[in-house]
Image 1 (tube, rainbow, N blue to C red):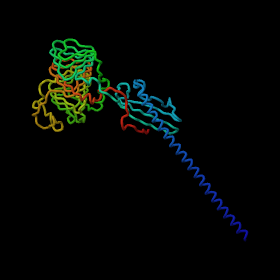
Image 2 (cartoon, rainbow, N blue to C red; image 1 turned 180 degrees about the vertical axis):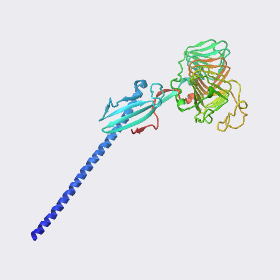
Image 3 (cartoon, rainbow, N blue to C red; image 1 turned 60 degrees about the vertical axis):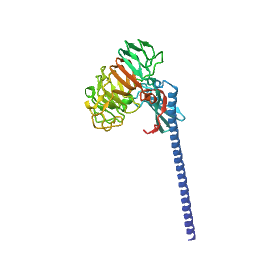
Image 4 (spheres, one colour; image 1 turned 30 degrees about the vertical axis):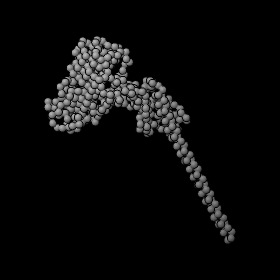
Amino acid sequence: MLQCKQYRRRGSMYVAVLGCAMIVAVIGLSALTMTRIERSFAEGTSDFAQARLYAQSAIEMGLLRIKNDPDWRTTYPNGTWEGGETDPRLIGEGTYTLEGVDPNDNNLKDCDTDPVLLTGTGVQGDTQYKLQVILVADTEPLTCLEVSLQAGNDAIFQSPATVSGDQIISANNVIQAVGACTINPDCEAVNGFVGVISPGSKTSGIAPRTMPDSACVFDYYITNGTLITVPDYRIDKHLISPASNPFGPTTNPQGIYVVDCQSQNIVITKSRIVGTLVLLNTGSNSEIKPSVYWEPAVTNFPVLLVDGTLRMDVGSTDLMESATINFNPPGTPYEGEEDGDLDDSYPPIIKGMVYIRNDLFTANSVAIEGVLVVGNTLTSTGVLGVDYRQTYLDGHPPGFGAATGMVVSQGTWRQVVD
């Protein structure tokens, strides 16, 4: 009996010891599992940090290449610059890829002032990190904005032309007077003068003034403008402004309206325009006729951009509401006032900057307060007055700056998750 009790006592002790051993084993296994989990987590965290560092390094490499290569837009393609699946670039214990694209038109080469989207991808182990940033051009105003009238080629004045203004008129080739002309402003020309240029002073041999890049000067305005269809390509007795679009239901807060003339002649007459009108593919006999009153909606934006040739006669007769429409309704005040009557009149004048890509012909009477830039040849046979406004030099509008470098656009850094 005593022996049975001893066996039972020994069995209980064995079970207790075995239970303790199992508990110790479980604790050990749990500790080992936790260590493995922590190590895996630490390795994953380390891989993530390394991949992010590699992506940042790729972007820094892109910034350095742009800074050190003035022809980087030609050197590097629109797409992968370095790395990729077929050509992995090693860095540390991982790899990186650098890409650069033009987010506007996927063409890095066409315009020096277009932005570039840099994408850096870093890979460490099974971890990938992708980082993006947008660079924009740091620009200075084109020197054509320093004068009241600039011709990219010749400026030709034919008798009985009279020119007035309070700033220099300039040509990147010659200024020519045909017959008896009166040219009051001081004149500058790269290759000199033909005929009698007086009474203003003459300076030849100047450096050519920088002109807009015809490949991209229209880009901002096309992208941000409202496309309108003008019946018979005739704007006659109309008010166009940020609050008024007579050719459709959609208005534009910046007053930018775009017309594709499809090589047809467009005529603008007896209208008030508050904004920027962009005329694309104009016919060779497109013209502005009396009487128009034109002013910008955005202070430093051009009022007229023409991708083609234009004839201009603003006229000397006031634009009369009594003979047309109410150009001063609520929402589009004139000189701070708005009303619903037909008693107002407006002087025939273009208050703002005008850019003509090809040739401009002016006749009878043209008055401009701003800057006139003609891509090719200006020919004037009447009274042409251009009073300079430095607004366009102090705060040059889109398309009228020369790129001096690329800078990071604030707020554009971001992680990309595929």
